[in-house]
Image (cartoon, rainbow, N blue to C red; front, side, top):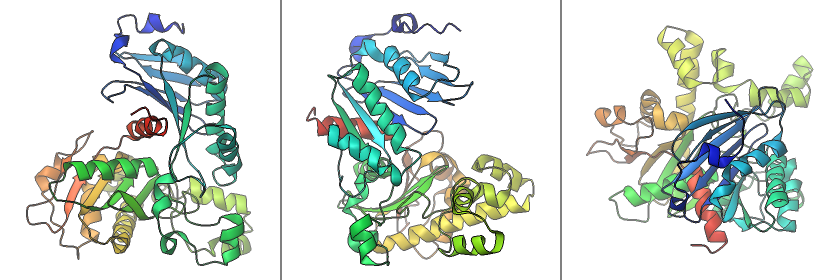
Length: 410
């Protein structure tokens, strides 16, 4: 396929006028860039993904306004080159602002903020807490500045939504000086997702508010949050995204002395232990097969014992965490599932809720079976004590919304 970057060549039939005052959303990862151009009313979007950055297989997968799929090879291309080409693809749509997803905002930022020199410096400084992500976010900001210096940019932090947690939830029981001098505390992540799905659940429920939701973002990365009246009161992830639930390759909670034990017994370095807990554990570590739940489920159905155990552990730990997080809520309206697993795995939702057998939950099996592949809806029985919802997350929509609000464009 031609690698021409003339946007009119790709979108020659596009009705650019339908993309009114669009906002560009960028999510720069360590080796990828996810992007979306979203219209002012959120009804139209152009999306894409730059992946395998830095490798010979680096490429941009772009979906046009008409839904056409394009693939552009950029062998060896890194963030800067990929962003230049992404911006060229989108320049004809005259976006009015750029919103960046940033993993870590520390404790200074409790809401989305417009980018200035200080904000950019803070994004870079906080790489100490998010070494794989924050440097990539900074590259994204600087790339846009270089090409479109006049277009306002906003950073939307994963951690910001959780800044409403009280000290009883965000402090660790460690010496006070570590908190005051080094900001060692629980921050939480997946904030835009938890904010979006909890707000959406409050819109579609018939129960009068204020609402108390347990939101479960379950994918390769997993987290759960207790949200009351639109505010995060507690969450499963902590100083880093490793704390909390068992995930695709991350262990979640383990004994804090495990590092010392492995050092003494196996002479493992801290770096090796950190890599093991982040990249070799979770579903992958227990099953020995894959971090993809679909692959693990298929093996479990064929009798693979480690795969069965991996699924049982995953569901048990999610159910246990949701049960404990309910303690943070003044009242509990229901549970909201989202993320790749939460939105699509009917059996996983069922197994998790079976762990919470003391909560008076009753599942409508037929409704549950019909919720996958982007479907939104409830699946609780009429006499269930709690509401049960599947709400597909839309972090890009939330980031665009917060970007416009930060710039007073709404």
